[in-house]
Every structure is written in structure tokens, then in C-alpha cells.
Image 1 (cartoon, rainbow, N blue to C red):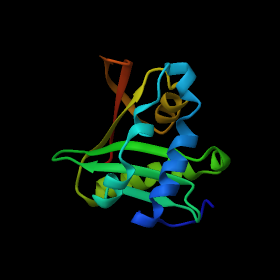
Image 2: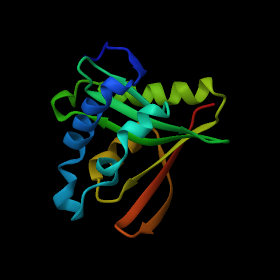
Image 3: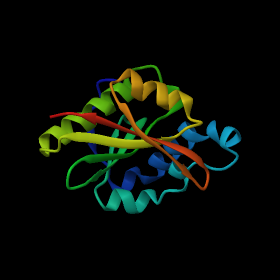
Length: 149
């Protein structure tokens, strides 16, 4: 599982992408009082746009990336709960950082909901620094960045 390649998702992966995202974020519904944004994303459109990279057979982890002029934006990272703790998330974050470097982009940026404490701890553990906090319609968002070049 931790050795599976990370590859661009295809249309055939969309159902499993949705399954992984829903399973990974389901625990936050009660805490946030609403369905987290990644669960409402248009996974088929993201896959068709070439933004989704997956790992596993079946897919157990994924990242959704957006290339911006001055950074790579990590729109989503999700690992199925059955695969958590096996290094999948770490491999995906390393992939994101390597991708930014390959694209000549100096940093990776992302945000997470302040109530997603587990995610915030993971980003801090892997060297992401808080850039700012903003209040949105569904609560506080914490923005992170990490230099990669």
C-alpha cells in the first residue's frame, strides 16, 4: 500500500475518489455541524481537469492540486481511514512538494478548517507554517504554506 505509485486519476477512479474523500472527512461532520467542503466537491470535474492524483489499487489516497502562478495549491488530501497510519499521507505530501519543485514553484499552500485539529497537527509536523487565519461562513480557516525551492 505504501509502495503503490502516485498517478493521475482517470474517470474510472471517480467513484473510489468519492468513497475515499467521504470516508476521510465523515468524522468532521458532527464537529463542524455541516458537511466539509471536500465532500461536496465535483470530483468528476476535478479528475477531468487533471487535478487529482491517486495511489493504491483500489485507491486509498489522493491529492487535488491547483497550479497557480507563484505556488502549488493543495486543494485536498485524503486517505481512507483503513489506510491511515501506513505512510500514505506522508507519501502524498512528499509528492505534492516534489511536484511543486518540478514545476519551478517556490511553495505549497493549503488551508484547513480550524476544527480539523488532526489535519492541523499533521501539517505542522511536516513543516507547514501558519500563514494566516480567516473567518468564513462555516468557521475559521487556517492557511498554511511551505517553501519547497
